Length: 54
Image 1 (cartoon, one colour):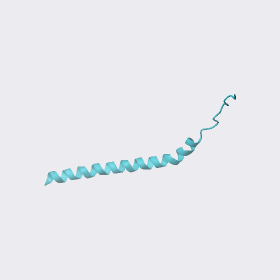
Image 2 (cartoon, one colour):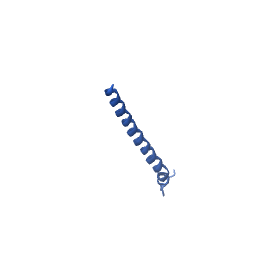
Image 3 (tube, one colour):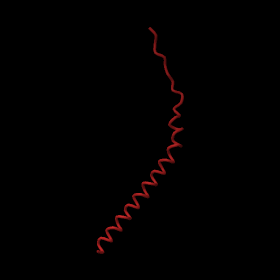
Image 4 (cartoon, one colour):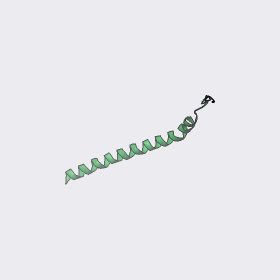
């Protein structure tokens, strides 16, 4: 019967290589969501003011 050999993981680098690729995409997506939410609030505010005037 043979014994199990010990496996040493020497590096876990794929995550650290992927971070620089995905970080800018996450930042851009956050900015787009922020601008869309801001514009949506602005439109809803304009509609309620127009509805109250008529």
